[in-house]
Length: 404
Ligand code: GLC
Image 1: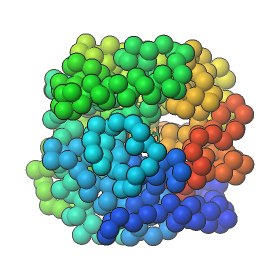
Image 2: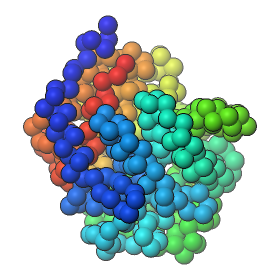
Image 3: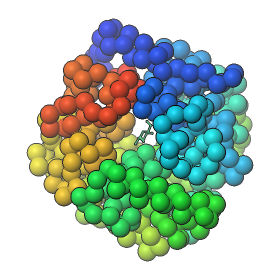
Image 4: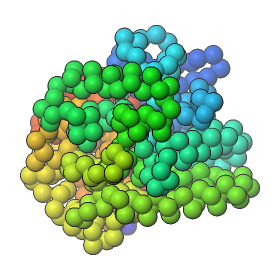
């Protein structure tokens, strides 16, 4: 059986992951959360907390629940869940992210999936009841405020909302060159936040005037979020919500095909005329997670891109940008390096289509990086060198790369 062939995470690594999660655990009054990295990222981040909850559920299900309860505790009146909560003062206070105490932008909605994963482990309906109002409010915010044209694609108002801050997918919409520095990218993104602040983060207005990308990963994650929230609604007897969110899954799926699909791949689109951004990044693999490719399309995708030595088949998997791209930089943050969330995501997508050996290869590569470099933020795909923040929690996701 497939599961018997899978690599077993050894007890030593499991213990190291547990120690890291305990080291990064923080309290804020009666709330509890996990910092992604004590020195570089000493706050709470939205999608990090969703991954952290999945990791924590392998050690202590109550810690996993607390992580998610705290990340929704600063939800805005309009439903937005901010991507950063500054429980304590720290280095990023030098930058303006739009609000006091939190940022004023969001991150991909991994939260529905994460809540459902936790629920599957102990079937605690009280936890679902506690989370549901925030989930519903956030979902309704995304559906109403991030899709002003009713085209059934959810928009982001800043690259940082994708979680891939300086990804080359955003170069054209930002009017930047492929050879920008990290500093130039940060300055440009901070300027965008200042512009968005001028219009009080009114998303439809901000999107029309400053930056409007309908990103592939965000929309795939939205599909997974909607499925989870529809399931949770049903568990709680909210049948109207269940129907509403289930329909939205179909609408977004149809629109992604209509607006984003060309030449066998899904591309992010931008602006009022939905222009395709033809930059080959790991985002082309993301639709595997929600089975948006047919089996034939997935076969070609794997053959032409994942197994292609001049695109993604580098020494360490998975580079976040194809080696062929002008913007490819093996040490450039989201412009080439390997990150663990993409690996976890693509691992699951490959398993969906029966590419079990390839999924296993991604896991093996992740384990080698962890064992040789430790819990670093990202890794050079050509040399395996660990880069960025230390004691970074995402490596713990290998625990969840074991399932069928
Ligand atoms: C960086 C990453 C972002 C992450 C944050 C905290 O900004 O690009 O995805 O959420 O660090 O780990």
